[in-house]
Amino acid sequence: MSERAQTAEAGTSDEGRPANPNLAGMGESLKPLIDSVQRSRGLLGPYDVAEHLQARIDEFDLGDAIDHFREHGYAALENVAPPEEMDELREAIHGLAKPKGALGGRGAAYLLGRHPAIDRIATNPKILAFAEVSVGNGLRASQFAASIMGKSDKLVAGGIHADQNWLPAPFPEHNCVITFCIPCDGMTDEEGATRVVPGSHLARRHPTPEESRSETVPIEVAKGGVAVWDGSVWHGTGRRTVDGVRTVLHATYQRLYTQPIDDYTYLLKDEEYIASAPEAMRGLLGERLFFGTAHDDSMVDMAKFTEATIRSKL
Image 1 (cartoon, helix red, strand yellow):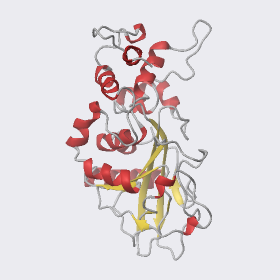
Image 2 (tube, rainbow, N blue to C red):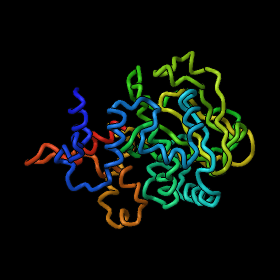
Image 3 (cartoon, one colour):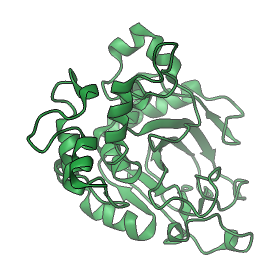
Image 4 (cartoon, rainbow, N blue to C red):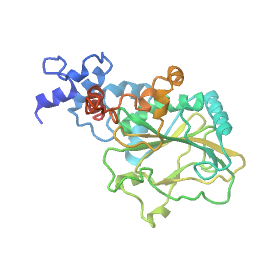
């Protein structure tokens, strides 16, 4: 593709005028994204930080965590949310939990839009900045579920696995799924921290039965912190060996073009909810995506299609 064609695809002409009429009327909101695409020539590599995102990565001091994530497939993020927000999140999860939850034990599923504390952490700017590095701009909310783990003398069923286990191998170089494990009270190895096989994401495939018994390490975080892992990394649930419970929100985000696990698009039709929801929630729900917008007079909403072609390159 010629340089002129690449520039036009990004949305501006060589002279700086809008090159794509479908971007007309969108204001300045997309300009930083268009500039980022032009700077990378639409070839942003896996785990690279787009120009428009770099300031937020620096603001949240995420550079070292991204380096660790790139090399090992997981990271521990510190000071993501204050203790009082974690307390409110724990209260919300326990209030919504059922005796037999979605993840095997006590817990809750399909959680967006059901409590402000959950929506707040789902749109946490530090989490979203880190997620964008992994699964790109325009990322979608995929699955939000919670688990409550008590003391046990055995491991939770499920074993070592990769989260994007509905994708064929080899997995795409650009990661499609990222999971944040948000423990309301922090988690240590003894408290049931998630365990990972460091570096396994580089295999870009599912583990074999033999590899599912690989040596693992815990992702330990203090209260207010978050554990996060790549969709390709092999991991499994830890075992709690001390009294009390581990209360966790499992927040999963996916790349723009993939099919989310949970369908939260119904929330976009709830005007009262949208009016009070965090602004970032609209993007997570796919408000600006073109999928399903075709009708008798048009193949798709071309403005949304054009916007998606920009976001997908970041």
